[in-house]
Amino acid sequence: MGGGAIFVGMNKPEKKPEMRPRELKDGSGWWYVLVQWGDRPSQQIGGFPSEDEAQQWIVENSAGWFRERFEASPFG
Image 1: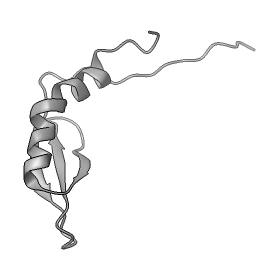
Image 2: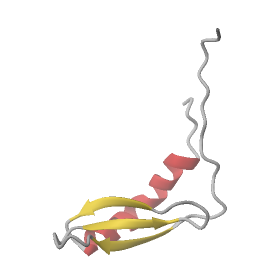
Image 3: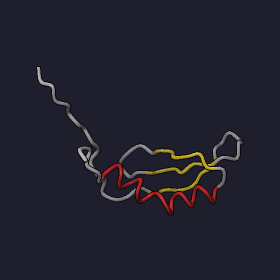
């Protein structure tokens, strides 16, 4: 039996997803970032205590978040 591992990664999408701040519907006042892909299920990133902080995360961290998922080699 072989001892190697098989890595299955996601293909890089055609374009970056749309990201928007959204308030949780539970009435808590917390926010998340809704990530909407053209051809994939949407994702939620959060929680943020305010819309401004969710928007700030998009501005400051979304490019790195995207890069980590689709451009980094799993082998270092």
